Every structure is written in C-alpha cells, then in structure tokens.
Image (cartoon, rainbow over all chains, first blue to last red; front, side, top):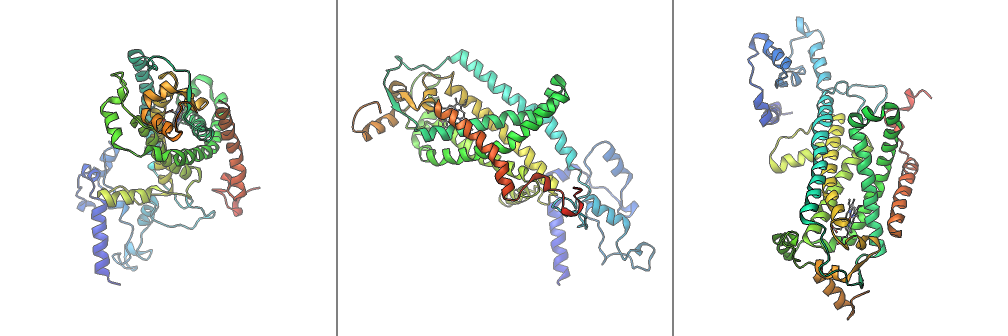
Length: 390
Length: 41
Ligand code: HEM
C-alpha cells in the first residue's frame, strides 16, 4: 500500500474536516508542555462552556506504527494505550463486540443527546409555538382589516362542479390525518411543558400513549392522501406567466380586484407545492423515526449538501445522532406546514364566502367561480359546449 | 360532507390496520433493540 499517499489523504481530510467556520471559535492551543495531551487551558475553557477543539483527543486514537515499542514503558499493550482505547470509546471510533447486536447497540458514549434535548425543549418549542400563535393573530387582524372576502353582487344560485368525489376524498384524507398528526405531534412535543403542569402526569400518561399511537399510525393515511392529491392536481399546479400577474396584483386581496386565474391561482399553487415538498420531507424524516436506526438519512443528505454547496456539515454520524437530526428536522418542517395550513384553513372557511363548498359538496356558485377562477370556468364551459352549471 | 366524513373514517381505518400490516411484514417496535439471546420471556 502506498502509505505516503494514504497519509497525505488522511491529513487532507483532517484539515478539511476541522477547518469549518465553527472550528475558528476554538483557538489553537499550544500543547507542547503536555506532550500533546489536555492542557489546563482546555479544561478551563470546557468549564466555561467555551468551544474546545477536541480533535487532539478524538483523532489521537493510537497508531501502532507511531507507538512506542512494546518493550518501552508506554508500549505495554502492543502500542495502543488504555487512554487511547478510552478515547476511542468516548468518540465512538471503535467497533465493539456486543451481546445483543443492533445498529445502535455498539455505541457506548454519545453526548450529542444533550444538545438535541436542549434544542427540542428550548428553541423548537418556543419559536414553533410563537409561529403558530403569530399566524393566528395575523389572521385575526386580517379578518378585522379586510373582512370576509364576499362574492361581489352575491351568489348566482346556480353551481358548477369544482371537485369530484375522489378529489374531495383525497383532500380530506390528507387534511383529516394532517390535523390529527398536528395535534398529537404538539401534545408529544409540548405536553411535558404545558400539559403535565395543568392536568398532572397521571392524566397525561394515557394521553401521551394515545397520541403516540395515533401519530405513528395515521401517518400512513397522510402519505396516501399526499400521493392522491399530488397525482390528481399536479397538472393544474404547474407555474405559469399568469401566476406572476396574480402575485403582482397581490391576488387582489387588498385592492378587492380579481386577477385572472385558471383552476388554481398562484396562492393556491404555493400552498400545493408547500404541502407536497414539505409533506414528502416530513414523511421521510417521520419514517426514519418510525423505524429507529433502520433508515438513517442525514449523513447522506449532509454529504450531498456538502458536495453541492461546499459546506462541511458532519457526515460521520452515530446512529443516535441520525435520530436526533431527524427529530429536529421533522418538527421544524411540521411547524412550517402548520403555519401554511392554518392560513389555508382560514381562507377555505371563514375567510371567503363560497370557498368551503368546493371541498364540501364539490359544487361552487358560478359567480364565485367566475370571480376567482374566470379562465377555469371558461375552459369548463368551452368543454361542455355551453351551459354554466354541471 | 359525506365524502369528508368518509375520508376521516378511512384515515382511522388505515391507522388501525397499519400496525397489523407492519407486523405481518415482520416488523414490531419491541423487537428493535432486543435479540433472542437476551429477551427474558
Ligand atoms: C379544516 C381544514 C381544511 C379546509 C376547510 C380546507 C379547505 C379547502 C378548500 C375549500 C379547498 C379548495 C379551494 C378551491 O376551491 O380552490 C382546498 C384545497 C386544498 N387543500 Fe385544503 N382544507 C383544509 C385542510 C387542508 C390540509 C390539512 C391540507 C394539507 C396538509 C390541505 C391541502 C390542500 C391542497 C393542497 C389544496 C389544493 C390547493 C389549494 O386550493 O390551495 N387542506 N382546501
């Protein structure tokens, strides 16, 4: 084997791996006095919770080629000292033999869990919760400023078919499961902070277990609904020039005008693509959590991002770390979706006269359709030869 | 409205069937971290 080349590759990789922005925070420490081992400065920095570049330990795991000979004082274990073995355990760099083999059972120390726990109990709950409250407040304000969007001149009385039964079924499969997932997810995330203090741990326990059951299992209905609505509606949601006009006119929301639109206007296309893209992402991270350690995704994802953006996200992840990333990502995506969907539910119910019927019985008032989706009505009428209602 | 209720019921039916189907495929969460040799039952 070409050891020089291998050595150069290792050095290059090490430099690459430990030269990202975050490493700059940890100053280079002179460790000659300790022969390369921990210094007082390292210990003090750690006590003050400052960043310490751990590579002098995490990478110093024993190289038999460089070790003192066995006959030497430090060479009693054939070159790898006890300290080096412990460091390997500390940084999960050994492959131990364990009694019950499993993807994660050979990991003895994994301290990223603290960071995950703090992130989940802290910023995720705080900012996620604020985002939900924020959109609700915004919609209440919007309601009082703009009011309900009415059909100009009132409903005509005749109707036109907007969604077939199968389309409405797909929508409500998606919507029903999403609302169940959202509520049970919030109970799981926030129950410890907000429900236990109010209802007590005894009452919370069955609620938590029930939430977990529903959340884990109704996810399949969500995925089915996602696929159904995607297949049925994607052709109507391809962006076009018309969308740009609609966006420039602000959808006519504040000017009380009606920019032209086909079956779905630009606002609806934004909802569609948000639901589809984030829906896939929340499903994948959810599956990764549902089958623990069986479907790790983040090391590969980070590797891909690194190769495209030149970032240095970690790609050497312990099984638990994979789960931690999946959990945090799952929550963030879910919050973004909930914010979008709360706005969607508003406009589909109290926000706009005549909108709910589209998903209620599938028939919308012809005047509503002409005002919000004039080009779609024209298309339908052209297809049917003549006649407004269907 | 009938379709809406139907879809909600369908979501619940899918949810109840999911664990049954998964265990048919041989997957159960209890088996994840335990191998035959150390299970106490
Ligand atoms: C109570 C809850 C909900 C109500 C009342 C509701 C209402 C509606 C209505 C009336 C439409 C048709 C709009 C039109 O005729 O142009 C629609 C479309 C749609 N809904 Fe919902 N919806 C709800 C929840 C959800 C949820 C939870 C999701 C996804 C997770 C969702 C995804 C969609 C999508 C992708 C469309 C097509 C694009 C659009 O019109 O924005 N809906 N919804």
